[in-house]
Image 1 (cartoon, each protein chain N blue to C red):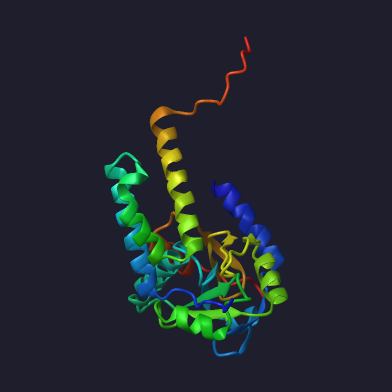
Image 2: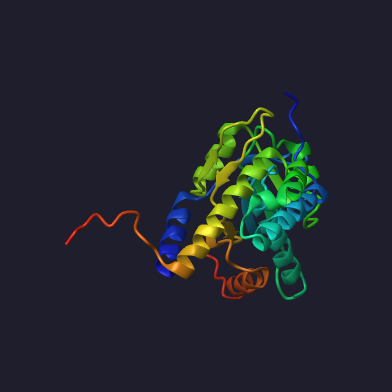
Length: 82
Length: 181
């Protein structure tokens, strides 16, 4: 496959904008991705595939971080130690 | 935190941090070429989703702030790619035109780039390629301050703002004492 040039500043901003719109929608719908299909598709069309994956991971991490901050750390399985 | 940073800096100074690369005009550049000047150096790659543009924006802004003070010597901003396969001179020129006009891009052979990253103890790890041949390069996010004597003076993480960077560099410049010959 032909090597793609790196996105320009304009393309980066368009991608980040689409991502932010998608994330805003998720925030508004308690992460129900089904409610944000159109924005998801716009996000995927504006960003390189690698960046979509990267931002998806970032979102998961941010959610996890927020969870830790609000709920505290809960170990996976309290192994019944006395 | 400060102890760890000073230890890292001392290790780096011992390692000298030399490099042999080429700039975006194809001219060979090594660390010695920058002696006599303060240098702010960042490792990144042009296909970077967000961190590198943000850090370069910050770096550019910090340099601009320092330029406003006529009493301070000029700072040379440098960008070293961690993705030499894709980031040739042309790619660097295209990418860097969106940032500070004096920001100089450096690239080289994979071996040269690997050596430069190692000299700065910068972690670099290219991820798997997708069907378009695209990939992300995971790397330490750090901006290094090198003094006119070629020794490391500080390093700045993502959490520092442009204003903090400028303030810190100014502090280093004002308290700078060249090592005895």
